[in-house]
Length: 393
Image (cartoon, rainbow, N blue to C red; front, side):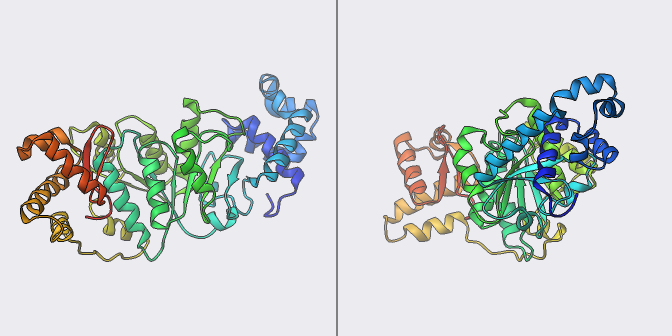
């Protein structure tokens, strides 16, 4: 593929991507046989029968017809009017490392305010993946890891899949820390899934250096098999993959194993042996497929992003005492500090558990928790589980 692709060739590649999306190797074999996508659409029925065989020809006939080519042309014209591009394999702007994989997509739909050659053409990419059922431990460490990468001499592109849990946490942390991020979608470029991440997806698409990408045609809805196919792109784009939390089976584990099969660096965050959300990570470390993550600054160095100095931080208890000193009575400051210390020690502790351990009434516990949350020291979820605010301690 030439670095500058004609519209006709782009249309043909787009149509081929529709036809061979789940079997890209067959698509590339057809490209090699006919010498190009346009040439394949110019082939006779006998030539296609010879290349594909009678059975496969019947199977792929609808996607290789003149009407499929015309449909792809209309699709691309409409998308380009909306600022969406289709980036062909081998073209400037197509992720370089992805071309080295065994089964890369024939092209990617791309939505972003920066051109794809700027997003994928310079800085290294790091894929951050994991479970949808992210714990307070996983969320805290995911943010700490991304935060450390943002302070590295070489600031990477953070790649993930826009899902709830680790993916969303990684994207948000990257945006908050000023790092570029790319979301690889398992739907069409016009369908942001899950719906709760619609605002996040739009923020990514409108932030310089960031983008939404997918190899699925517009209109494709979220179905299970699409996520499995999507994972190979996440693994292929990154020169390193970080598995934050994962059960033994799941999309994060699949992506991690794919990254390992592609010869990429793989890192995993260890966790408790009895925690299902850490069993996948622990298994990859045991199998020596993944290196264990111990310190974010050290991890950044191991990934070749440069040295990050460790920053001394005040303890949560000290910060709380300093903040409320002079604003509350000494007795109240002492009690709030006790509560803060316990929340920091036990991520995800509930208000009921805090009341029991501190031997306070529930109303008193709730009042102090609300005060700490309002002042940015802790976070509470809908089930009233508390954790220290990420990035502060």
